[in-house]
Image 1 (cartoon, rainbow, N blue to C red):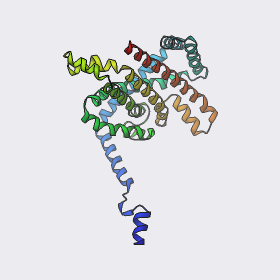
Image 2: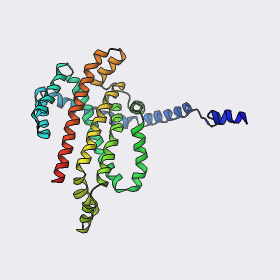
Image 3: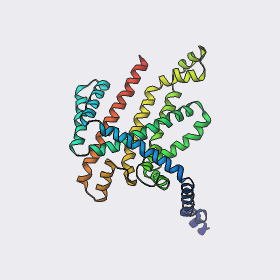
Image 4: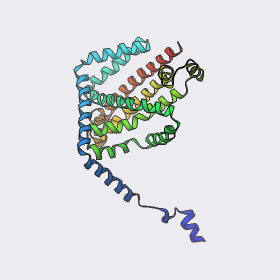
Length: 297
């Protein structure tokens, strides 16, 4: 009896345990086999990603820095209607260039912009699917919970096994990490539209697709924009983490500072990341609020 209590109650039973490392090795072998079998397809995907990110980077680089700052100031004033705040955003963005990190900021933004684009392209229809299909919702919600709780850097491991290092694994890991709020907020916005409006739409003979396109999506626009805001923030956070697999930009500067234990060297790239995140966050929040006002009007 004492032995039973000792082996099964006070301690987790050894007989019930399995060697997770062996299972992990089998998964790794399966991933490596998949990568070898589909090498040409993965290489084509990698070329597409590199070309897309590089094109965005070249486009942003071709725009004079002062024009980018001016565009941020004007957009900030248009959305916030506060000149002081708009000028402040322009000044702190100029501070990035004063640190000598403007090009690194462009590299970070290029990867983040493409990742957000993919998140919206995939997350929006998936959010609609969750809203209109209870079966899809029951299946996908546990998957989304898992994606949201797994540590972000874990996504880098299988992506590196499939695409080696640099931009491609960084992009896909960022998309997996950042797509969840886009899906959730789209689904939430569509399912919480005023029932009276849905009933009125149905009574006037609108089909399900017409109700979705002309009633639900317009009414849920502010919530969807909040999802875009959260996706941008998560992509920005993940782009920095993606420096672990060789993604260039501000994240690489921070990673090098960490590896060299140089807090001062990592301070300014970190501040620049915060500056970009604050500007993107405030502008997308203002856009979401503008959508909310337009909806009520």
